[in-house]
Amino acid sequence: MSKDTSDVKFRAYPQFNQPELAKIAHLRHRVNKLCLPYFDRKSGPDRLARAFVACRAIDVKELLESSEFYVRTRKRLRSKHMVDLCCGHGLTGLLFATEHCVETVTLVDRKKPDSFSVILEVFAELYPYVIPKIRYLEEDIDVVGEQLTPSSSILGLHACGGFTDRCIDIGLSLNAHSIALMPCCYQQATTRAPRVLRDVLGAEVAKDVHRTYRMEEAGYIVDWTGIPRAITPKNRILLATQRLT
Image (cartoon, rainbow, N blue to C red; front, side, top):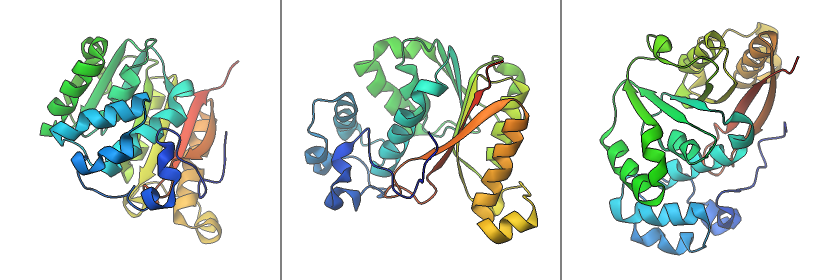
């Protein structure tokens, strides 16, 4: 699964592989009526995007980011219990809740944004079976561990800086089924990779190598994949699954 993340194609929204659409994939403009021509397919992702037009609750970038992360991790990350740490608007966790094998999705962030309730209404309309699965905890992730189910799957989509490492801490403490992370804000990260790795590989790769070793040593197999760089240059996904014994 590991691959060069500098050349990854869109999968949830393949129409954005067209150069003229790829140019707008990073925009923080709300999905609105002007976006309707971009989402005219009959697919589930396009149907969801069209549902966001009326409520104007999410940016183009955030929709593409969460959706592309989901399609690349869903088969190996999904489990009965999912935890989306530093979840913000919660879209990524909600996408996993559409999987019938997923029984609960716990969303965690310090403060629930107003956009969450609007996004949840969209899911209630399109996927009503999702709603009973969802729990949103307004907590600091440093104190939330005891409220989470052991062997859950952990995801952290752009958990800033050292929060990515806290996501790993929580995943290991829960003996997580799997862990998927897309780090950002590397300059704020607490991970201290060996100097030679930072010098040769660069600080960002070195920190993710260090994180990879940490999860491998804890009994996981870690692969690297990514979402299209047109959405964000911080596009690397670390996907850890428990090693079969």
